[in-house]
Each structure stands twice: as C-alpha cells, then as structure tokens.
Length: 286
Image (cartoon, rainbow, N blue to C red):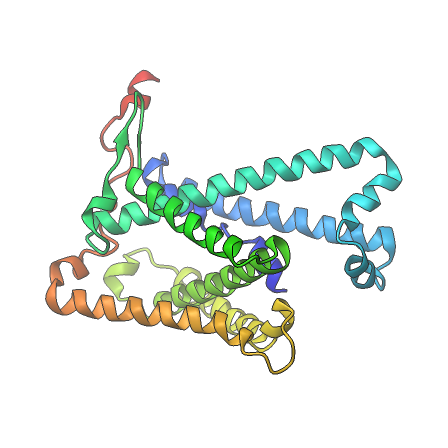
C-alpha cells in the first residue's frame, strides 16, 4: 500500500504549472485525468501480474525474482523485454525531469513570496522562456548531496536508497495531503469565495482526512517491514522523525515570519500573478 501511494506521488504536480496554464480549470482537469490514468494503468498491470502467475503466488514469486515483470514478458516474446526495458528507462528519465521541474517551481514560488531567500527566485531567460534557475540549482545540489551520501556509505541503490526515500516520500506526501484537507475544512470564507461548494470544502476534505489518517497510520505502524529492518531496530523511527522534524522546523519558521515579518506571512499563497496576463515571447510568436 505504501508503494502504491508512492506511485501516485506527483499527482499534484499540475498545480505547480498554474502560471503557465491557459486557465485554472485546465489544471484541475489535468490533475483528475492524471489520477485516473495512473490508477487505471497500475490496476491493469497488477491484474495482469496476478493473471500470469496466479494471485496467491505473486508475492512469493516476486520475492524470488526481482525481475518478475520482465520474466513474464519473456514468456511471450523476447522483444517485449527489450521494449519494456527501454520504456522503463524513458519513464525514469521523464519522472526525474518532472520532479525536478516541480520542486524548482516550489522553491521559486516560496522565494518570490519571501519564505525562502530571495536569491532563489532568480529566473534565467532564454530566447523564448524564463526558467526558475534558483530553484533548479537548489534541487540539483540537494539531490547530489543525498545521492553522494548513500554512495559513500556503500548503501544498496535499490534495497536501501530507493526503498527508504520512496517510503519517506509516500509518508511525506500523505502528511501534506492531510494538512491540505485539514486546512480546507477550517479555511475562512474569504479564501473559499462566493461560489464555495459543499463537496470541495467539506465532503472531499473529510473523506481525504479519514482515508489519509488510516493509510498513514498503517504505514507508520508497518514502516519496519517496508524498510526490511530487523525486529527491535531503531531504523523504522528515522523516517517519521524526519517528517516530524521538518514539520516542526516549518512551523517555527512560520511563527517567526508571523511575528517579525507579518507582511511576508500575510502574503503567503497570494504571490501567483494572473496566468498569461502579460504576453510572453511564446504567445507573441504563436
């Protein structure tokens, strides 16, 4: 379940490109289509795996053969293994580029609003567009430090780095979604607007809160199994501690801004300009 949640990380990515969208409704449609497409593909693949080896044997065979999907495809035709391998490589590259772009825009937006250092809001203009250079370099440096740290310690790239960081990402994503659902439930009227609906501001956040708490609780309880830690090991405590520490640091920084820089605190979330209000070189050329 944890890795299923991790597989859906990035479903919130369209919101990061709101300033580059034609209108805000297109962002909502893209998010819904993305969730349905990902869910459909993952469900079909899971069904196919169970159909190929038997539902009761999937777990045992996957534990014995790390390349089980390729093994199954090899039974049909050898060329399918090659196609699947190339698709996997392209998918990894695409996902890395997507995460990089989204994180760069998060950093850019927070720096523009004064939450992060203003220097990170720098954007380098090319011949047609401007890119969030500060956020991109920040993401590159952090990723380089993390990967180097795992490499220096000799950690297994799949068994440790990928598993640990995917689990951390899934838990962090769930925590953020829970925070967003809670914020929607208690948001003031001026935030909701005149056309606020019961579904958007009450029913959907409540359902998300209930389901999210249940899944996050199960993940925290079983985090030792996710990480493959030995009984009695303190390793399972590391991931929840990182998330709690990050939330505490963020809360303290927000409190600092509210007390000493109220203009910055009041402007959080209000720095998004009107999409396409000023024609950029791309629209002019079109």
